[in-house]
Length: 317
Image 1 (cartoon, rainbow, N blue to C red):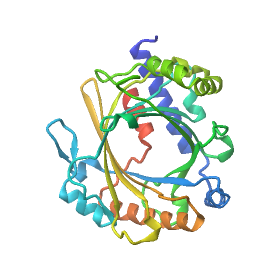
Image 2: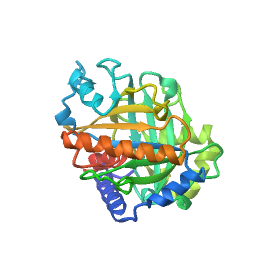
Image 3: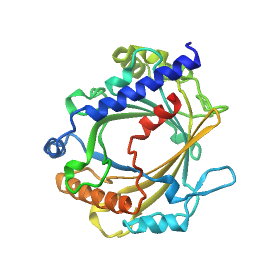
Image 4: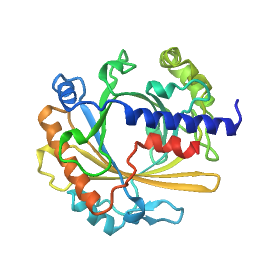
């Protein structure tokens, strides 16, 4: 196993290369996205905004976890989101992402994530993702019942056109595990080899597929653990058919290492039923509207990014 210092250097390089490649890659054209939806290739989407956590002013419980204040509820009510379930988060997780110590499989779009559910342990899962700028490059498409989805988000100053929203294609596949029986975060850490051995024993075919496509996965590490919380809400007008079943969430991450700490808040919403082109355009317009309103009020972070990239940047510094 490589030294911690070497591992950190590798992770940092990975994060910088990945972010740079995203910034310089061709953005998926709107007509291409629309066609993928019209053809029924992608049926799910999640829109995301990284928030200005400092300005929002979350409360804090006795252990340092976040609390939703009446002021924050009021802010989101202005963009037709209702988070009225009380001050405490409804879900608590640990997140860990696999980082290579050798050949960089992340450049090929692979994401290997563990999410330990601290409220309902039976909901804990490993998520395997292939993330790409084009549909044809997606991996794991031979897996039965794999999910096809878009990650969508804007950055910088608000735009008026749908082309201001950037999209990634994703395939995603989940397998559940039981922390009390299989493996669990202990003392704020988890060995990747423990997870990999469990996957080999329970889902050999999946382990084989991953290793065949990305051989260096076997030498991975989990460089850190995210202390994560989730608040859930809904659209204010419960009679609007567009938002029937739509999930609104505020995810709150606390990242810690060697005495340093970073807090990240993200608001997102995902469709509740299969996408069609008409609903996709309506969701785009709503997203652009709320992005602008929150931006103008100073509640949008100037540094938009995926939480995955934030994880690798923080733990790779």
